[in-house]
Image (cartoon, rainbow, N blue to C red; front, top):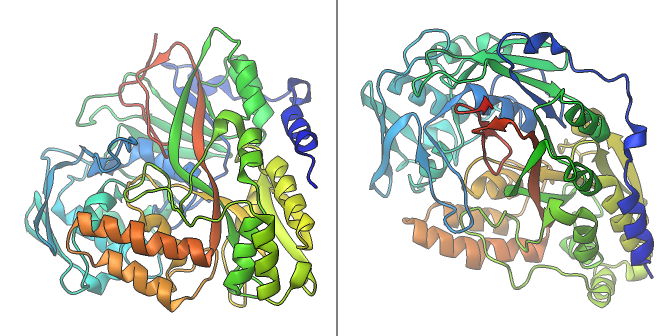
Length: 522
C-alpha cells in the first residue's frame, strides 16, 4: 500500500532557499524612470504575438496588460456569469440567434488607429478560422454572421450555425480585440511581431526573456500611474522567491506551499489567493491504445486518491468534481465523478481485458517542473498509485519548454500515454474547456473522437436559453464525460501571487491576468 506519510514528507521538503542561485539578477535598468512593475512569470513565451496563434498562459497574461476587451469577467463563485464592460457600452440578446454589441466611443489603438465595430467584426471572423491554434468560437466562420450597422454597433447572427448567440456573451469577456488593419496584413505581419491593443500599457520590445511594456498615456480610462511593466520568464521557483525577498520583483506567481509559508513571515510582502478558472488534469491519449478504451481510462481514475494530492498542494489547490472550475458557468459537483476506489479499478481493468493490469504495455506519464506547483511530487504519487493497481507507468519529468513541445495530440497519437496540464481561460464560458478538448473537431490534447460526446456538446451549444444550456451541461454533458473519462480533473488551482506591500491598486483575475491600470507604488 501507499505510505501517505512518506509521500507527504518528501513533498513537504520541497526546494529550500539554500538552493537559490545567488548570482541571479533582474536587470534594474528598466526601473530607472518611474519604477515599473516587475512581474516574474513561471512560464516561457512562444515568440509569436498573434493572440490566436498560441494557448500559452504567460502570453495571455501579457495580453491582459496590453489588449482591450469588450468586457471582463471577475468570475466570483456566487455569480460566475458576472461581467464588467470595458470597450463595450452594452451587450444584449435581441433574440435566440442575434446579439447586439454597442461600443464606447473615442477609443484608439496604441498605433493611433481608432477602435470601431470594424475591429470587432475582424477579430470575431479571424479568431474563428480553423487554422488558428487558439480557435475561440463555437463554430467556423460560416456558422455565424457579423454585421456593423454603424461604427459603434455590432450584430452577431448565429442562425446559420444553429446555436444560441448567447455563447458570444461569455466569449466577449475573453477575447482581446485586435486591429482590423493588423488582421488584414495576415498572420505573418504585425500580428505576429508585436501586440497592438487599446489597454493601459503598450508593447515596446522583447529582450531575451523580458517583455517590456510602457504606460499608454492616451488610455481611455486614464493614464496608468506606473511607468510600465517588465514581464520576465524565470523558470525556477526559488529564484523567483529570492528576487521577491531582495525587492527585485514586484509580483511573483504560482508559489509552492512551503515557499508561501516562508514569505508569509516577511512584513514587506502581501498575497493574493484566488480560486481560479484553471483545473489541473491528467489527460489521456485517447487517440491510441490502450487509452482509446474508456474502461481503462476510468479504471485509472479510480486508482488515484486525489485527497493526497490536495494535502501536498496545501493552499495551492482546491477540490472540485467536474471538468470545469467551480467559478465557470454550469459547474456542479458530479455525483458520478470517479473517486478513489481500488476495487472498482480492478473490476474495470478485468472488464477491459487487463485483469490486474496483465497485458498492459509500458505507459509513459509526462509532467513538467518549474511552472505548476508540486507537479513532480504529486506525479510521483499518481505513478505509485497506478503501479499499485497494476498499471506499468513511468513518470517523465520535463522542463517547461520541452513539456510544451509534447503537449498536443498528433496524427497516430501524441507523445506518451498521459500528460499533466492545466487549462485556464479568462471567461465563464465552459465550452472553452469542454468543446475545445472533447469535441472531435478539436482534439487538443486527448485526441478523442466520440460521437456521443460530440452530440452532447452540440445539444448544449444549441440550447435556446442560458437556463436550458446550464441544465444540459449539468445533467447530460458533464455526467457523460465523467463516465467516459477522456481526462481526469485532479483539482482546481488556487492562484497565489506574492506582491510587494507598497504596490497597491492591482486587480487580479482568476485566470492570473492582472489589471494594473490603477496600480501605484506607495
